[in-house]
Structures are given as C-alpha cells and as structure tokens.
Length: 87
Image (cartoon, rainbow, N blue to C red; front, top):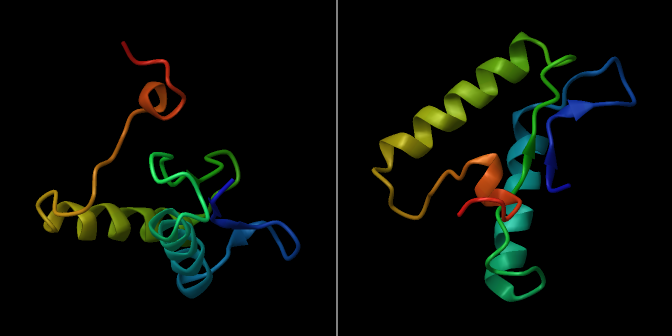
C-alpha cells in the first residue's frame, strides 16, 4: 500500500488533499532516493465501494493534472502492468 485515500479511523471518508498528496509524494520520493524499488509503481487505493464524492473529486483532479503534464514524468499503468501480468 502506498497511498490509501480513505480515512478508516474517522468515518471512512476521504483523508483530505494534503494527506493524500503527501502519501503519493512520499512513495515517489522513496523511489527516487532508493528507499523503495524505483521500478515499482506508486499505488493509489481508492476503495470504490466506500469512497465518497470528495475522493472522486480528488482522483478526477489528480488525473486531470497528470494528463495536463503531457506525459512528462507520469505514466499511468493498468492493473495487469502493476502486478506484472501484462505480456
């Protein structure tokens, strides 16, 4: 688990933008410094069965922001790629 977007201790809602981005950036930094495998994708857990509108908005904004970068430094992978199942 790298970036869990759900606050499991307080109501099962979105953890908030700051904590969510902090979790993502923390794993990206660990990859860059060698504290984590640099080839390992950064996982973002959405928990679609419990996520709320705030989680949906965050994910939509994150996708829009990374797409606007035009592929510079960001590559979204499929589940199969993330788990090494892609041919």
